[in-house]
Image (cartoon, rainbow, N blue to C red):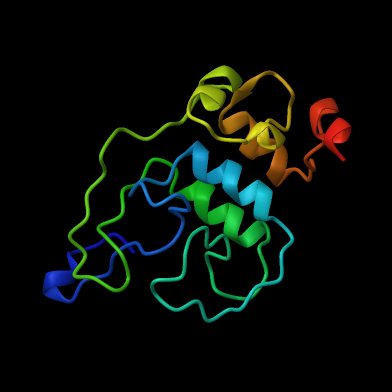
Length: 144
């Protein structure tokens, strides 16, 4: 999927980047976990607001979508499916981030810390691939 450029009829990445920052990273994994198990339309037209966690377009957000994130972790996309593929990553991929840093970013991804170590990283992806499900935190339970 990453060979050549769209300007020369090549293939380029249009999925896996769930937060529109042009990078597949651990933050996309966190979004995937929040969307996991959802049944969605397999035909998502361009312009539909993110996230699009059904990366392979089969209508289910499942382990196949997670596998794409795991395999392509750190990869950069070249733009949207609607445009000419001219986007570029604004920063380096986030592969390891603490719960505190995530909170400072204004994101709610605590559910994706599957091993409960306070860090969102590849160990959590491994846990998800091994079947570990998100556990609701005490804070989340108290809000219900």
